[in-house]
Image (cartoon, rainbow, N blue to C red; front, top):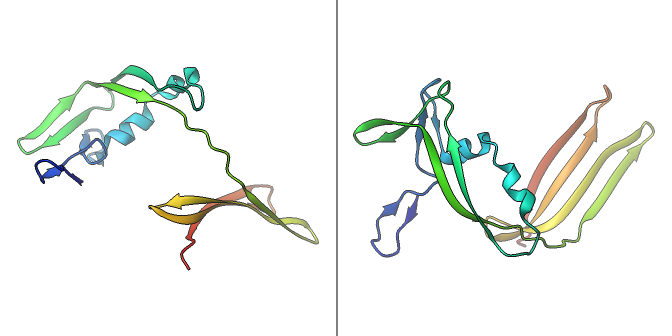
Length: 148
C-alpha cells in the first residue's frame, strides 16, 4: 500500500486491491486478472523507444470464473474492467557476461549475468541453465547485491 502525498492517508492502488475468485475462494489482485487476460497483442503496434501509445482495453470476466471486489460492506460482483493506459517499450542495450562450465560429459552449467537495479540498489541479475542427464534443462534466476 502506498501513502497519498496530499492526504497522508494510505492509498490502495491497482496492485493492492484484493478481489475474490468466487470459484476457489482465494484472493487475487488486478495484476493476476491482467496476466490471465489476452492483452499481449497491444504491444504489437508499439515500437521500442518511440512515443507512448494510449489504449482502451476492455477485460470481460468469464462467468464460469466469477470475481468479486472485497469491500468493507461485503462483496460486489465484477463483470469486467475498462483500462485506459499508456504503453511503451524502453529498449536499452546492456552488456552481458556469459559463462559456460564443461566437464567430461559436456556442458555442466551455463550462466548469463547483467548489472541492473534491483529493489532500488545496484545488483547483478543472473539466469542459470543446467542440462539434466535425462535430456531436460533446469533454469533458475538469481540476484545479488553489488554493495561492498
